[in-house]
Length: 198
Ligand code: UP5
Ligand code: MG
Image (cartoon, rainbow, N blue to C red; front, side, top):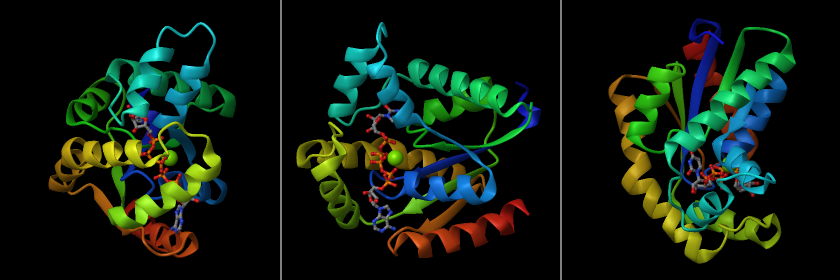
């Protein structure tokens, strides 16, 4: 696909901020295509014959960032597939949970497509921790436990927040308070996006 035909929004925020929840709503009401980097990595981990299964499992459990070659390839493939499926060369993508490191941001924007905006869901750690521990009772996610959550928070602060700061310095960040209930966060998100995307 050509970068000129696609609109990319990065969706960032700490673990449990509600990225996936909000993306699902934006898909059903605004026709975005949602690609979660974490979901793609988890699917690749389970794919029989994948050469990256053990590596991904180990990184995710420890809240570490999988080498970007793997993630970017998965994202690019998924974008191509989604466009093929939609039967159109054009599409609007929500890339959820990526980029998590500054070099990933640069690489993706150089080799795939620059982001139009970054949607940043801002949420206190305490709130995110409660949500993740609650979800962990049923999610089956290997990283929804107290120890992995602590590691994910550390990686987010040390490595991923600089990505948000970088896009902020370019005036591309739309920041939304992700503490209120999902419907309220969604209303704010819709309003902010409409102001910026028209
Ligand atoms: N919930 C959501 N919104 C709520 C609200 N407003 N009020 C109350 N509850 C709310 O939500 C989390 C939980 O909170 C749910 O139970 C939800 O109902 C509730 P969700 O929408 O899933 O939040 P999200 O921000 O998507 O949380 P997630 O756990 O998916 O965030 P992470 O960023 O930690 O997970 P991700 O899947 O993106 O990444 C996992 C791991 O993959 C990373 O740690 C890393 O190891 C690896 N990874 C990479 O290496 N590279 C990448 O590029 C991406 C991931
Ligand atoms: Mg998610």
